[in-house]
Length: 503
Image (cartoon, rainbow, N blue to C red; front, side, top):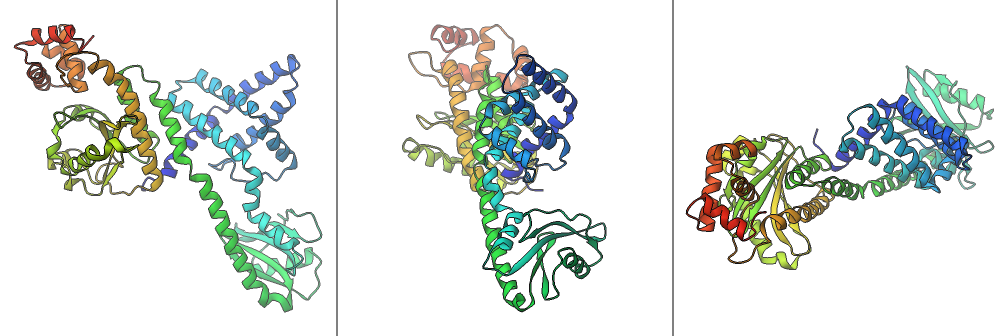
């Protein structure tokens, strides 16, 4: 199945939900301990926390749906709890912290696990806040409105599903009764028989007519007077179409900002990096974790040399990626886009990613075969303040996969590239820029080799440390000496230390 932006974010949400379900006992114990403490010290919030704990236990542990809050609460007590929680987010945060503590104490708790649970609770909180608006876009609310209307001659309506070889009434709505009724005991072999049973149940006279209208996976039964049946069907059908469009628009509005959630999660993940290696690892993992991609290769870019250098690969052969040192002239599509960025980049607030439907048209054949490339996306890694291009992330959805990206993914890629660039620039500045005099530009990998040379590491030791071949390390050493116009390794290291190129 092709990955989409919503499916990727829903995966993060589901991951958080499954983690919570898996640790139900530990979480309930943690919540119980919290309640005992609040009660012991006489906190006024005890009752609210207790009610919210019961509410969350029901939805997190007893509802099987992947989306725990898709069903509108019909219990008045739960509705009051929702209103209370929406005005006191501290309670939700308190109980969420209890979940993190319970899970972390029982197993290895990765940062991705932590973020998944955090995202789950952010969506629960968001849906609690929008609960009053959600009610207006339910089929129950629609049916109650048309039944209550004085302008439409409808006596009652019912929602019917077909399960266990029987037509069953799930809910019904009547003009003269409470707007929500359950008739779970009413079942029949046919819609006609079910309509007759409902007429008897509602004690209707013989001049009523029941109209069946297909809706999604079930049937709506609308009871009206016989003489009005021909007028009612077009009106109800049209009203349903209008209602469905409104419902779809509401759902789309709730999903349209998901890409912003992914940007927040990505930023939080990469900010944890303390070293250059951690930064590149977190960046490549984040592109895959929070966007609809399966593989990511991160490259640095040398403006002076017009070269790309492999830094790290996620769900790829990392050693193979790090062995790549490619002249941009051999990547015509990337070169064309880089020329555009260099011409206009200083006047742009962001650098745009570009989509390559067929990688064979823009990448050397050896890379297309080696990594089984088909469709790829290239996301520039840049600093927003100067529009300086530091590198790029090359992304796809797996070996030989063709795919498309939507506007939300495109917007997120820009923000990801900007955040990654700001993070990497801190390390680039530390490693490359603090010296004066004739400027020498090194790739991040060359800086690593130079540091190992300064520490006295042999070619073999440097290759082992960097997970590279000795031949590749020798090439790096030769490039360093050539750039520094040094006669040997010792001279190169001495100048690098003297001029502050390395510390």
